[in-house]
Amino acid sequence: MSIKPKLLFVGSHPDDLELGAGGLIKAAFAGNYSVGVVILTDVDDLAEANRRREEAISGLCHLGANPESIAFAAFRDGYLECNRRSVDLIRKTAHSVIDNPSVVITHTHADAHLDHIRAAELTIASFRKAAFLGFAIPNSLIISKYKPSLCVDVSISEDCKIESTMFHKSQVKIGRIDSNNIVRLHRAFTEVFNIKACETFDQTHLFENEESYNSIDYLVKDGVLNRSIDGIQDGRIF
Ligand SMILES: [Zn+2]
Image 1 (cartoon, rainbow, N blue to C red):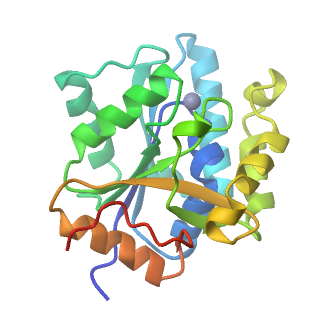
Image 2 (tube, rainbow, N blue to C red):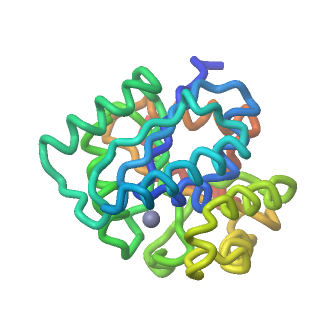
């Protein structure tokens, strides 16, 4: 087996990672992978921003994270911009929790929320040597554009993942988090993976970056990720 990959999770808002990648976060900490977590934005109101950070820390720790692995980049909610300063800040924030990540898990490009789209663009620009896994958020996923090729089997961990989202009480209260939508998304690709409950990811690799494919192979061989039954490997040329 090749070198154990180091995983960096990047979410736009404090609840995105539990919603989109809670199963993989749980599996990564349980499997003793090196893991860093970055949350990009805060709302303007300081008290509310602090409350939402605390909700995120509680939700992530419920999945097995430790608070030292979580960092906040403090971009302004709704105003993520693709520029040099943003790339530098994401790299610096990520560096405080992990060195040289080999797999970066962030929003899929098949998303309609402006901050999510920007997060996907910025994250790829910030870590060009890594393999990228794109996760789906129920409320803003563009289902017709989303072609996942990997998944985590959340048949057993689904309850824990849903519990972790419920720590975001401020978002549950206003109806932004709905466990029915999470469960529905887990079952939307059952036939693609032949797994009842799947947390899915699409893949982005840079041309001729064999190492990034090897990192994904490691996670598949280790039983963390499962491939789609048609075996599509997103254009591997090696
Ligand atoms: Zn979000």
